[in-house]
Length: 351
Image (cartoon, rainbow, N blue to C red; front, side):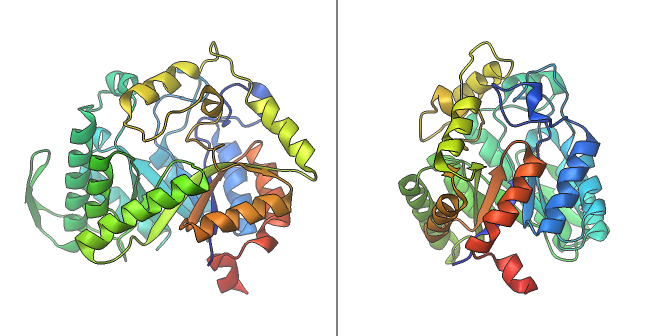
């Protein structure tokens, strides 16, 4: 079984909430361009571009980059990399996004994917005028949002009347050559039931092998019951530390997880916990990197990390979205030392 290796684009600069400027990862296009071009050359499969208008890693007043402008730039400067961009329906009109995605597909045919996110950050919605309803209602809106996107890609003109959106005779051209894969994530029963209805693929937070097996089985059962088929892809983020020895890797882990409740990103972590219906309680140590990225424990020598990645592939993960710091250097290390030990569909296809 293959598992594709991708990475998480750090729109907020670095990944680490308790580590400051020493990450050397500025929230600039120059920094992201260097990572993107390097990852494309090395053969990484997908990058996820998160959509955040405020910086939840380095503090509200720190800079962060806008996801959709960044997506166009990444696609234009790479040749193979798939770009999966997050969208929060409460911040977008679906017809406008359908037009955006059609244009992006003309820039990079077949290399655009979508991650539909039921937003969790009330403060961000307040500052930017986003629609922030109850947890379950955000998934209802997300499902309707995707219905509109698919309708606009499928036929012209398009009419729609729903609880959140209404369109009459809407024309979207150009359309994507093939509709982008729609990912979505969530852990509540209501969220996963909605995702199984409207998404092509699922992306979860990091978890232990047992947690991931249970989650994969759950979402697969729902998709089989609703559509008679499993989801096309299942992705998971994970923070990766590869070093020559296990002791070196553990020292790096200890360095990045020293918890400081006074750090700028701690308030956003508390909002995430309050406004998300999570199946697991987050520890303050896990808060250090976000998305439960430390929970898979991809920390150790190349052989140890590769063994664990293969185990996640056997558990049902088809796409691993790597976080690491400093990202460009670590992606080069991972490509050199871990790629040869992990079967991947893109690398196999290029041989």
